[in-house]
Amino acid sequence: MTNFYKGNSERIRNRSVFLYSNQPVVRLMDHYFCKYKSFIDFLCCLAEIADEYRLVVPCKEVTDSTAISGMYPIHFRRRPIEVIGYDREIFAPLISLINAIKIRSIVVSAAENGNVIFCGPGPNSFLVYLSYILPKSVRYGFIIRGDTLKTVRSIYRGSWRLYASTALVRFFMRRISNLLNASRAIAFLIGAHLKENYTGPPQSLTEISPLVDERFVRNSVRPFIPEKTPLKFLYVGRFSPEKNVIELIRAFELAAIPERKWHLTIVGTGPLEAEVRTKGLKLNAQLSFAGHVADEDEMKALYDSHHILCLSSLTEGTPGSVIEAFARGMPVLATAVGSLPHHFAEEIKFIEGYSAEKIFEGMEWCDKHRKEMSEMGRKGRRKVSKFLLKHNALAVHARIRELSESGRAN
Image 1 (cartoon, rainbow, N blue to C red):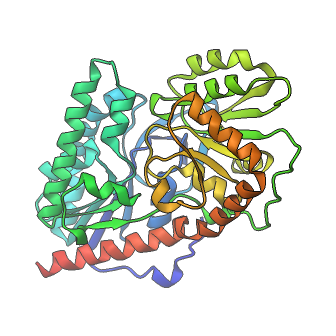
Image 2 (cartoon, one colour; image 1 turned 90 degrees about the horizontal axis):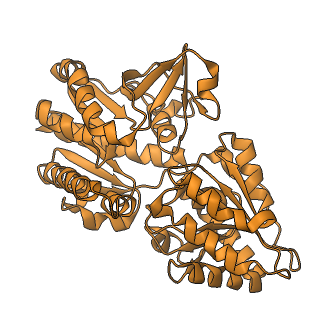
């Protein structure tokens, strides 16, 4: 990654900023790879700004190149601090505790020589554990990407893990609010609606939207959707309960009549993959699975070769797939979740519910209003500049600097 922050790269004396990614990576020799880069790429972008940033990543070493198949290469400015990696989310709280204890001595040593700030996702067990075992002089930056409580409820509905998981998330959220009120932390919210989940003073909450690399943005104007061409819908996301993919497939079953030759391409993988694929068998040629797509050019081609992105989620923050679609000038049909109504009130055709019937109604509306949908996609493309990684990294850097200076004053 080239250093496009040359004008902002001065080292600020006596400050260390640790950036934690909860997206596990693997290391093959001296090269790093990650299955999903929607957060770690932003941290890499932030780490480019100044010398005091150090990345901390859960990492597993591999020796077989087949282990990195389908993964994105991650380019770190300098070698990150590695902590124990994990494959399953159920083990994350325990391994995060071990990692917090492991890294404590490194952070304490840095704190003895100046101000220390630890930034990472929230609510997250690793940062919360650190907040209890590190000196009180250490401050925190929580990057809050979505409504974690709502997401956990969707994932574990009907499971014995629901009560334990929601109780743990509530505990983490209370801890973040306590740190905000004690002036020991700031929160970066990817979506204004997330402010209602935390009780910190207004000045401790900053809205950001680091969701797309500028290299992903389409330079040319996207053509209008042709009037008599069968619509090609695209879904991009995990196969998990909160994404509501089964209802999306059911909506396509409602649309499956000979004279309506719509097509749906589904990109992604996840815990419900077997159920999703079984459900899609009835649709034959009207549905195809692309699996996990790690190649950026291949992903661009998928957005460009389809007409409309369809998001059927029950809960979201600000979905990266929507921003990527808009970066390519692609129209979006979506449920009114997360920050989407706040950011894109006039650029998205919103589905009035979450059922297959409501999703199908939205698809029919798109079919009858193709020119209007195309115009909405172009409007979304014009808004994408505020969601660029570079723009948001500079905003976060400025707030971290303010937090550090306030710590020095105290």
